[in-house]
Amino acid sequence: MKRKNIIIIGAAGRDFHNFNMCYRDNELYNVVAFTAAQIPDIDDRKYPAELAGSLYPDGIPIYSQDRLPELIKELDVDECVFAYSDVSYQTIMNISAIVNSAGADFTLLGPKNTALKSTKPVISVCAVRTGSGKSQTSRKIIELLMENNLKVVAVRHPMPYGDLVAQKVQRFATIEDLKKHKCTIEEMEEYEPHVIRGNIIYAGVDYEAILRSAENDPDGCDVILWDGGNNDFSFYHADLTVTIVDPHRPGHELSYYPGEVCLRMADVAVINKIDSASKEGIDIVEANIKKVNPKAQIIKADSKITVDKPDIIKGKRVLVVEDGPTLTHGEMKIGAGTVAAERIGAAELVDPRPYTVGKLKETFNIYPNIGRLLPAMGYGEQQLKDLEETINKTDCDAVIIGTPIDLSRVIHINKPYTRVHYELDEVTKPNLNDVIEKFIKDHNLDKK
Image 1 (cartoon, rainbow, N blue to C red):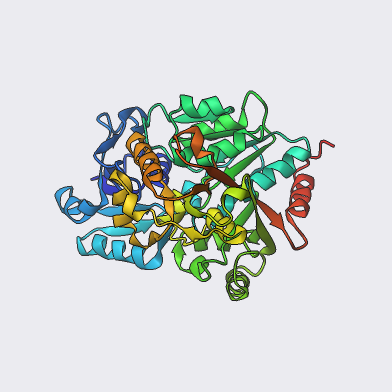
Image 2 (image 1 turned 90 degrees about the horizontal axis):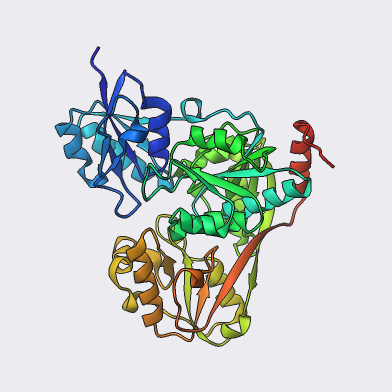
């Protein structure tokens, strides 16, 4: 029987996982290409033979998603599998129309065929959009588990932008490990908050190999925490699913893929940032949670902000640097740095656009609605240099770093700067402490 020709449409993450789960070593299918979007400079590479299995001795080429119609024709493609996250329903159906009009089928794979089963209890933390507050929720849950003397190993949604073979399984236990694995800013933002709290985090490409390594971590493992990325659903079957909803983007929880999947699967829905959102936004997301998942337990929370040096903000002209993906495909117009500037009384948010260089200038061309904020783009060495040059060229009094890591550790900033920190602070009962106490009891994990 002729093997079905497949293109996997992705962004260096879910696409590789879906291939590993459903197509690697499967003689019914022939994956002829991956296409890439969202991540700069990932196309024109290969998914390497060392990871692709015996059916692909030459690896699998990765092309730009822009070439999708011609690739379907040239490679006689039968089916395209969509495999990345944080996209509007309009966007995903536009891509479906491109695929169908070129003659191929359009497929979305779900958890039944892509989620792995762990030997340990699993908590998954996901979100309906990038930048909803998922990472601070993950940190809060880990802290609660650690307070109960439990060994927690976090597994982070993939961000493999470098040497894919070297990134097959990555373990981060110290800050030095970030340098050893040549992490980008985007990776450091997710891994660093975990390791400085004393828990291990894994990531990489092959998520079955990662899971088995995490379960048998040399420092011990009682619970696996899936720390999701964008608004993707978990790669692992979860015993407890927590989904974060953002009232700054009301309605997005029902109009972005696969965020609505995460919401419908949630045992607990956390409405975050209620201290900076409108009542109308909060009411809309709460109504939507009850509409599509009435069994979900709802927790409301503030995103509590603290600033290292508030004096350099008050009355000053400031440049606000926020998390890159949150401003780009996350489409946010406000972040922790912006909130800090407003609350402390900055005189002005300085527009970085006249000062952008290189790849940052390209970023603003691709995402023109970012506005007066600077996304901390750092997918590669050149983007890091461009970020440093842009910050240092900008005519401002001070810089507000609203990213989860201290940018001054990886770039030189030539003017006063301060970091903004943000933590989850639940304001309703029951809260996450009650949820985790029940989880511990249900899984006989009590070590007190």
